[in-house]
Image 1 (tube, rainbow, N blue to C red):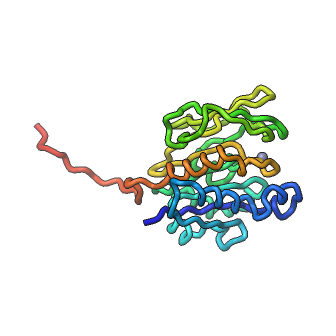
Image 2 (tube, rainbow, N blue to C red; image 1 turned 180 degrees about the horizontal axis):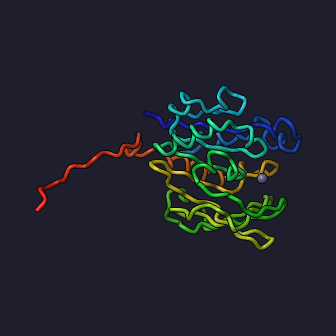
Image 3 (cartoon, helix red, strand yellow; image 1 turned 30 degrees about the horizontal axis):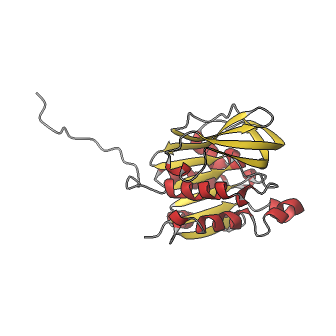
Length: 243
Ligand code: ZN
């Protein structure tokens, strides 16, 4: 069965800001969907897009039941995502759906629900970012150099208030001096979340070949495992007679 990927974007900046539309004329979601479609690991995958204006915020239960990996970009419309939509996303992740949360999705409702923390960080627009691969053997780092630069990015800096990541793949340094855990895997129930830091809407980040490779690697990595499914808490019989 092909991997089913849904790229979700609030799709607000592109309609209201000429600078953003110039970078992403069809929307950030379309650019990300093309990056995934071009990735060799995802050959044959079904890649769809959804936006906030779609029914049920683009993430109805039927849509999520048909999704193995959800990629989420949001920024100025976090508060317009219905609470029940965020709960549905979090629930599907706990049962095995993968989630790739991008850039300002650190403040997206589903991400905050899954983290259980404030997800706060420092920020400053207009900086230069150097991304270091700190776990070169990790599948999400496959084909990614030891370090690469994004000449124009927004700075996000520590402390980043998330639980300690289960796997730390990338670390960012900024010309202003800050650092940030910028590629983090966190298991939630039976699902995996990958938070990836870069992707400010006025910068050409999702056109960068290293970023596009990481997006595809990440979508493949967070795909559900055989452990997916509903949770049960059965009473267990002893495996052998007690003495
Ligand atoms: Zn930003």
